[in-house]
Amino acid sequence: MIKLIYFDFNFWRIDILRLCLSHSKIPYEYVRINRQQWPKKKKEFPFGQLPVMIVNDKQYSQTHTLAKFCATRASLYDTNELKILIIDQVLDWANEITTHIAPSIRAAMREKNFAKSKKLRQEFIENDLLLWFSYLENLLKNSSLNKKFFTDKFSIADITAWRVIFWFCSGKLDLIDPSFLTQTPTLKNYYNEICNYKPLNKLEEFKSITN
Image 1 (cartoon, rainbow, N blue to C red):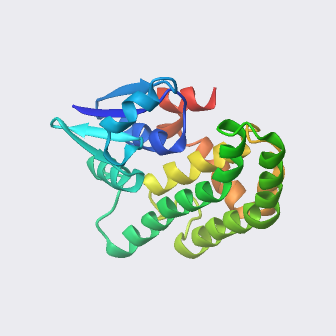
Image 2 (image 1 turned 120 degrees about the vertical axis):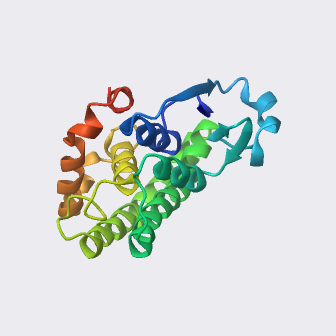
Image 3 (image 1 turned 135 degrees about the horizontal axis):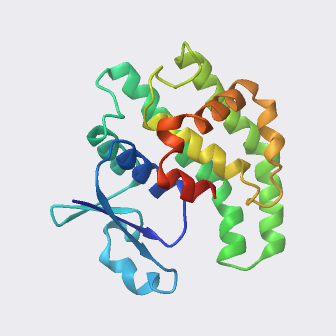
């Protein structure tokens, strides 16, 4: 059985793996590590990072790599080379926008420097927020005929895009007004469609993320 390991909170890097597997009824074990344990546990894992996946008693790491593995197992990847390029761009987009907002999160959570965090978040909103969501919207427009799924059939690209958009629209990121998505109307409509996509929103993992 596949074992997934992450911190004791929901985040897109682990959630896309869980949603993939659950969507296709692939059993997995989920282990959470609390933040107090992490400094002692860190050296046990490849690259000193999470998520980690264990298959046949061997550890594997890196979000993109694990996502491709889980999606392939779940038949949510693709065999067409051009479709693969689209899916991989969405996965890389998720990592890029996370990298851009990360300094403002670190300043608050690790450094407890809330003035610095506020300044960095404001800079992110001014310089990166709409820019990067516009990139995703343009990818959807240029890749999808039906504008319902990135490759015109449900894949891990849609799970990933939905999960990251949900994060930014959740109201949990300080100073980010969830209404920003109205400025990318095609992407907003897409997001709403995915929220209402029954094979996804019926999953317990989906409910645990959104509740």
